[in-house]
Image (tube, rainbow, N blue to C red; front, side, top):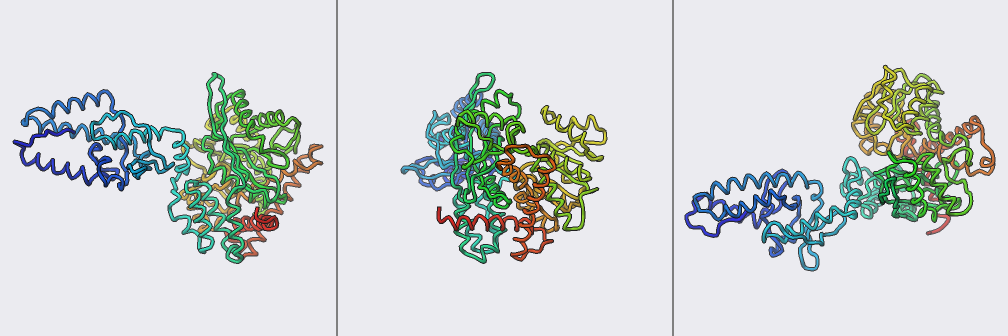
Length: 637
């Protein structure tokens, strides 16, 4: 706002206003989100206090044509006689206050990451996510006050860049917006030694929320192990740093001839136990933090299984939903053109994960075979007539039910007649339904990203096949309730509120938060089987433990896929297809060994077999000790 330079004839109200504006100009630059201030008023580069000011307010944007017109009108009005100035200033203040409020609402989320620092002797406005400042200064539309405003405009350009968007996605990837600098992680760890491991990870990877959460859970489980042998601290520090991380560009062309670019990832976490094996996930949320978390979990899962393998994970932020077969094929071929350098039977063996089914795996394998020049049936999940076992797609889901059966057997109970809630509606969830039906249980729910479906009569084989048809046609689960009157679909809800005896979490990471855990407790659930990796938030874990709900960790219960993958590499299995009975027998035996190893490790370190954390901590301890021994034997590599 431009004030008249003459002060003759001003009344006391105008004098007071000038004093307030001067105070604002020199002292009141930073404001809380709810306050209304004039963003034009504030020190520029000529003010020494500017470089030490924390910036929490949102930036200015270029004015529209109407706003430029308003400003021109303000300049004219400010040059009128003193008799009309009071009314003009009141109208301008109201108008500007309204505009500033709109700017605040529009930019509050983005610019809360901004801060001020000195670069080459000049105060600059930096982005605290990627530590960069705007370099392209545009024309300043706000008058001569504008070195600060010009930087804000430049920062606006920077925040629209791909570099910032990727950094911001890593910063705010968690649904709960968990900031890595909060002490919640360290508070959960009792010993100083274990806490130092976690603090080092926080310092190195502060924005990788999912990976830090996974490390937190593992360090908690290993507290007694580390306390008995300080040598394991060094092993853990090496284990938490992946052997290699590959990030690459994946360009592809859609059916309209338009070019798109996605980002590909592969993290080969640890190969001390053997060649890597891990899934490939195609999902828009995919980033380096999620890839590292999945690779870390897979490393421990593979070490816990009877068949020793290294761990890896990968994927892309490509979304296969809504893509034609040709578009998916072109993307998979482009993805494999970079990935094939790092794959092979003695290097890395990819498998299916979220967003990667038979179609995607077939395209990936076909391009891999074309590039390497020979046939190696080492990709898990291909069709039967290529190579591999006859029940590979069902292995993970069936393994979850076998694991639940082992837990119930120790309690002198069985699955028959128990009411089961299942989340997710992918291949794992549907195979869980299938095997629960075979054992006489009553599965009542499935879910997707938009809500959940409950059938009070329970699912049967015919209904499960109908669900498969719905998913294959990319239809909503809501269509199921149009056929079966006793079913109902709930929008924007989760199935954990339904009455149940067992729960199978088969959707995605952090799908169960604190309120969901409380719903599970109130619904009568006694056992939670983790089908997805890290399905519970830290707060949910605490709720479940206080309620003495037994948890079967994905690291152990989800080992069925690892077992099937190793059987596929067996020479005898590669030459002939096994019968379903033979394969299920071997899968049950492998799951039993995994269960017994987890229980033994827990009891060896003082955990009661009936305690809710016994299986979780025992699985981590057994897997870590196996890896630690291999890493110790192989030296510092």
